[in-house]
Amino acid sequence: MNDARRYLEPTWRRPPGVHALCTLKAAGSFAPGETGQRARLVEMMGLPGSPVWLRQVHGIEVADLDAVDVPERIAEPLVADAAVTSRPGVVCAIQTADCLPVLLAAADGSAVGAAHAGWRGLAGGVVEATAAALRARIGAPVRLTAWLGPAISAAHFEVGDEVREAFLATDPAAAEAFVPNERGRWQCDLYRLARNRLARLGITEVAGGEHCTWTEVSRFHSHRRDTAGGGAATGRMVTLIWRAGA
Image (cartoon, rainbow, N blue to C red; front, side, top):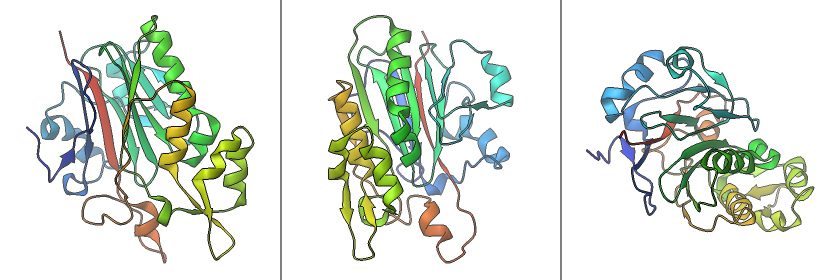
């Protein structure tokens, strides 16, 4: 079913029964206002059901999709920036257009999760919160694996001192993810920051991190690129993960 024009699949050692993908620009935009396009996603991507959409606020709240009425929450998005589930056929969905989508899965395929990790979420601990929720859901010492989806690369992600300080306040090793530029600001490596935090959690099987939403113009939406110079609002990719049905 793989259509390289419409989506890419994680470059990881896929846990048994786990499926995941990230849409490309050719598939359209799945921003919150694109309700028609979202409605077509199930058929377009061959999903087991409608994704459970989140109203993302750059926080660290994790939605436990095992504890909610999924049909109701499909119609009324949960306010959260991550989701976890162990229920087959429940599709976690994260929208991005430069921020980093992080997929997590139990190595035995028993549970999956997804996180929206822009710099605020990463600094606040959204990856840690998602991993903790997954481990609580699994209830056993099962190894977790991760995939880092398409995000803006360090070469094009310029930030101020406040961003660097937010990371250094809790992790001095984060300094390696910031390179000073000639404008007195910093080039920030979201991929490195995420890998550092995953490593601190004991998650060492991490794939992905090879794309740049800014430079790969034909493949990805990019908020910073598309709105530079007063351009119109950009679209959104969606990164999805789910467990196959019994």
